[in-house]
Image 1 (cartoon, helix red, strand yellow):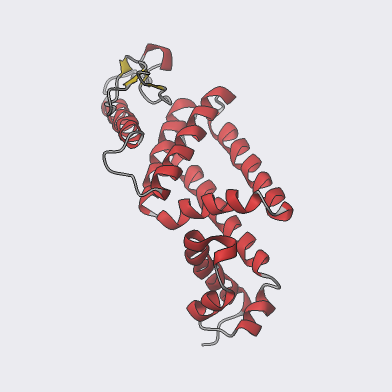
Image 2 (tube, rainbow, N blue to C red; image 1 turned 90 degrees about the vertical axis):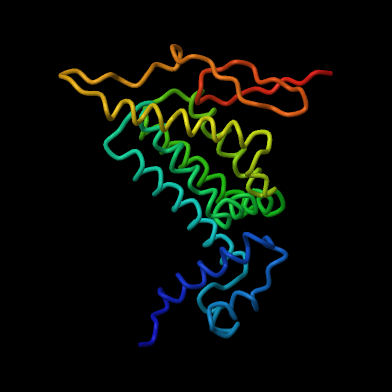
Length: 229
């Protein structure tokens, strides 16, 4: 059965995401995308007039998938519980290098292309607003959440997701968040225990190499690394 134009566009976005995430806007050829989809370049440009249009469509898909993952994770939750669930959902994206690498390529391209910059900035604002609506948490906590997410993007781009400084902190955050969620879910009795308040959570040190030390911060927050001079 012959595919519709909309179905072909979806195929193009999937193929483009794979190519752009590796080689970026300027290093990717439309010929490679067309061959991956199984269409001619003239037909590809009937679906999307320019390579920039394809790049923007792939970027929009990338942000949409992130927003959908956060909505699904936070469903039925609010406050810190919702944020912890979204934190775990985003950590799962480490297995999908294409999605996180595409984010990095978007930020690079935005530096030299005004149209892309406007699009990406709008998606960023929408993502930030979504986090606020889903959690009701103050901006400073959302900033910590986004900072950890960007750290993960960088470590995935560097293929440094095993034993590297920073990744250990993210894994420790995940373990703390998971154990807290399990404890909360398994609480019995008429009144279930609420998730611990951030200010009351014991501080946690995360192992750093090279003699550096992490300042003690509540588990689940972005740690600050201090190193000897």
